[in-house]
Length: 104
Image 1 (cartoon, rainbow, N blue to C red):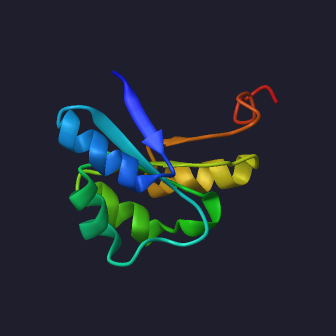
Image 2 (image 1 turned 45 degrees about the horizontal axis):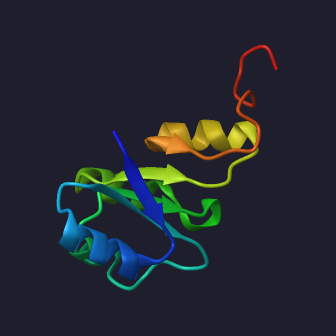
């Protein structure tokens, strides 16, 4: 599967118009857009990629319940990875792929 992800949400909306079946993800840092769920649904995205400091269990649960995959960036702490996993994120972006490896 190809997943197109961008910080430029207008570009994602345009891609959705051109190819409605293309899997899209919105990257987000700083703060969430207003009325986040409606905003993401309007973009036609299937995944949300927020900066680590923007997520909590409630957000992940709400987006997951709406069918939106949540992948968090950039997480470089093993305890935080475990917390995010317990909250139900689908994936994380990290600079250290072996960080959560049992042998580390």
